[in-house]
Image (tube, rainbow over all chains, first blue to last red; front, side, top):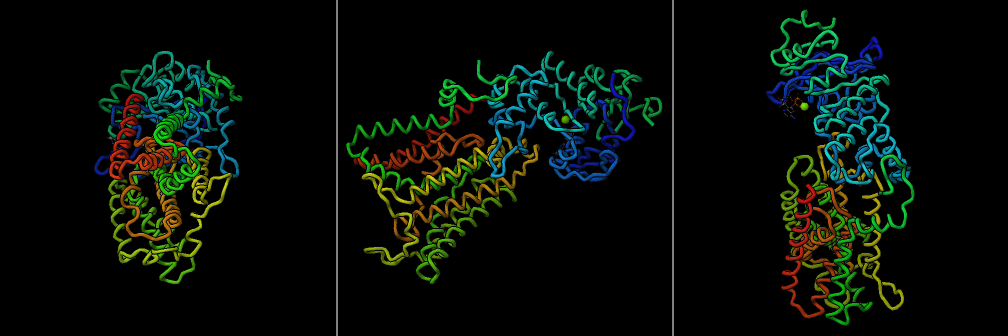
Length: 259
Length: 341
Ligand SMILES: Nc1ncnc2c1ncn2[C@@H]1O[C@H](COP(=O)(O)OP(=O)(O)OP(=O)(O)O)[C@@H](O)[C@H]1O
Ligand SMILES: [Mg+2]
């Protein structure tokens, strides 16, 4: 069903560490995701999932280790650097500006403008409408309404649409279905699968293991800022993942960790 | 139902859509308030609606209007600038003193005065972004610093000293007080400049990426940062441009009063500029508001001061009225904001 993973990981983290004062949010974490693959990233609250994403997105600088993109070491100093590489993120708290409308949020920070700095509203509005349509988001009545007037699910859809608006290679989704009803969750999960089928590398953070087992190819478990193990979906089960999340891995060999 | 659904690309709005957009537009409320105010005073005084009086209102509005442009930018970023009045007073003293005492050419003196105000803007911006102090405290501090500097530099003298009869200030400093006639109404160049500045501010805020980033920074700075906007740069630019506006306002003030007065800008300018912004529908919570609203707000403030004088209300009651006005406007903002959440 999914494309076979390529040989070089799209993104690879080697021994990445991140401290907030005395809190060690990430301790020597290895992580990888490949083109055409959905990698789930799971772990308890505070395990370091969002921190890992923000390190890759350039929001936080890493305190140790290395980030490789398509095999080459990269220094990501901000969201613009990440975007240039083709990395997009749907943040856990969505990062939307309530008083700005849908189009304005979609293009925030990378607005299209002409040589005298006038914004090109018409093409931005058109692309926004097209992107939402391609994601089967049909409940938003006007792309010119402020996102404050949208429902939780619609806001979530806008945040997801913003990430797929750009030509990208790697998409992080930090709990994209947390605020969604059944039908909307279905759509986001379908979208996740579709992105991977298009050859993108997708990282999905979720606390819902049913969802994770449905769409993920592999599962990385974080616990207290450490990588407990990487599990292939077909060779593991929910119980094993729950144990890894709560107690850590019993022994890496048994857990089906990749070589 | 609406002309735009997510499935349809943009197309030219129908006339009905224009009406809908007009009523939903942010400056419509302030505009209706302006009409009401004008109706009230024209009923109370025959002279109110006459050309000369309206042109006088605009002359009185031009200084506060230009200050309010800077104030709007700052408030849109969820800040507030209390230093407007004394910074302008300082710029005004620098201009007049350097032109008269120090033998600078008039244009150099004007440039130095404006630069002094820009420097205060940069200082405000640097403290707000670099040290992350609340704008309220920072500008309360610079209010007092500018106040002190004004009196130290001027040694408490007005420029030119004496100030009796025709002003001896060089004509360049008085340029924006000069008038031209349209029909039977005299219009000052300063009023024209004010409208031009409002136009520029409108363009920058609504038609450029910078403007959008100003709104985003005031609305949700964390989200703005996550999308790659350098919010510290936005804030610094906002306070700097605000300083520039105070500098230009200083020039306008000198043009109007024909002197440099160390006691200018201490009483009504702060409150009037904030009142204009809030009456214009800009939210003190940041991220919401328009500069066109501010223009209308500034005119309302001007009309109140002018109209109350016309119908013989003492100056002290004007303070009372503006005080009530600003609190009312903020209360309206609070209530509507709460409902939206
Ligand atoms: N900006 C920050 N400053 C200080 N500590 C932080 C910061 N961000 C995260 N932390 C800490 O780092 C640890 C990991 O947090 P993180 O947000 O990455 O967890 P998470 O796995 O995303 O959890 P959740 O499932 O609740 O979203 C936590 O102990 C958290 O308190
Ligand atoms: Mg998280």
